[in-house]
Image (tube, rainbow, N blue to C red; front, top):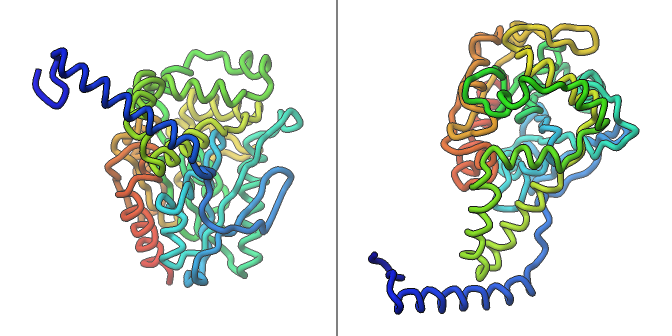
Length: 356
């Protein structure tokens, strides 16, 4: 064996000494680690419905865009992955380019929210935020950016209310839930969702998190913590790691009825492709999505495979459809250095070309 630590008595001794120095420096780092909370950009509450809050982000300069951009995130994690820290913030990049950015915070459901349905999330909460922005800005329609499950909600809303959405952007959004490489979908096809929800009520966040972690058990449960040793003598890198860990495990429970409906209609019945998605007695038809659509997907996404997202092209009714692939994974599309350069600029340029 060659390299800095050859498999010899001397090499093993050198490796042990290097590890001892690293762990010694790690103790000092952990004693002095700073604030690693997430959320970097100033924001203010502008609208509320129960636990659901609409925030407006404040950039260093006033926005130049005339049409606000509303971000709809997934329910399973906190929405501030898009504004994790100053150097990893899609929101900051959009603000710097003049966009007027708002985000929906779905809050933390408790037992009183057990019977919230998809209609509540899509019509009452997402629709309420859209209507507030339309009124506040004096516009008939606003721009909507839907991410992951929030993208599926946005597609439903745009189908049911096409006149209220001027431009639609979807990011890492599942559309065809039955692609062969969709591991999550394969797991839940035979799940008795009714028994599951009737037994648990709300679905615990820890249960959901462990399901996601087990999609890549070695990488997400072992390898990353072994790799942590290599950065423990670097205060900033350690704070970045802890900030991401805090975000991962600060997940809300899932309102039982909405979870039941989403798994049945989207994962099990593949409703976007096969039809049958019912939101408050109205069926969703993606052919009614006739506004311009920008669909951004990640090429190495293990949660939303590229083919799942690319299926949108053949289903929407718009003739103004743009597709953008990103070299990275489901989380990297928000936080990687490449994402900070490419994603906000791509969204801004696409919106600006349609601002008239």
